[in-house]
Amino acid sequence: MSSKSSRRRAREFALQGIYQWLLSGNSVPVIEAHLEQVSGFDKADRELFVALLRGTLENVADLQYEFAPLLDRPLAELSPVERGILLLATHELKSCLETPYRVIINEAIELAKSYGGTDGHRFVNGVLDKLAGQLRAAEIAALKSEGRR
Image 1 (cartoon, rainbow, N blue to C red):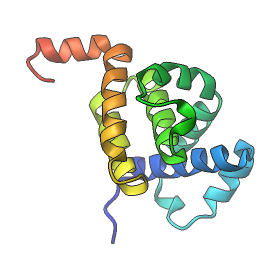
Image 2 (image 1 turned 45 degrees about the vertical axis):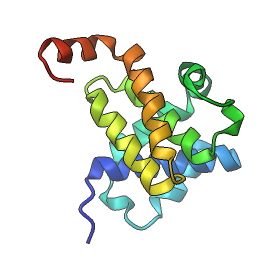
Image 3 (image 1 turned 90 degrees about the vertical axis):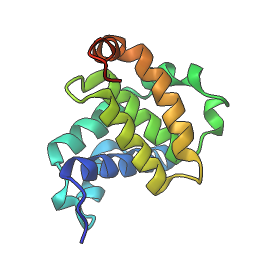
Image 4 (image 1 turned 180 degrees about the vertical axis):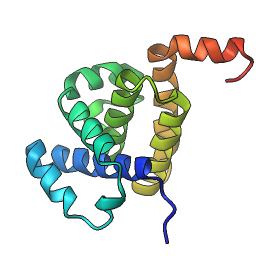
């Protein structure tokens, strides 16, 4: 029995959709229809899944523009899993301000551990930590002033 939260499941399904889009170029409605048939989808937060998948895929160029300068290699050399996780997490950092940046980074690390290569989670963590410093500077400063980072 799995104890994954509905929000974590939504992120997993969104990542699967982004991965599918990166490899196949299928349209968002086709990807959504496919994933809705996958076992366990009924346990995901559907509203979050749709917001993450659509929000990410509608803004791929802008999202890559945000994280590409922080990479230690060309964008084209990222695995589809790493690229998908960075796209998803960058979208969340930019658009889901109600979700603390540390939660977004932690969720991205967990996705990388589950789906990525051996040290993919370290790479994802490094990029997102730098990106959060840019996109969530006010949130990080507020936590530092409270003595919690």
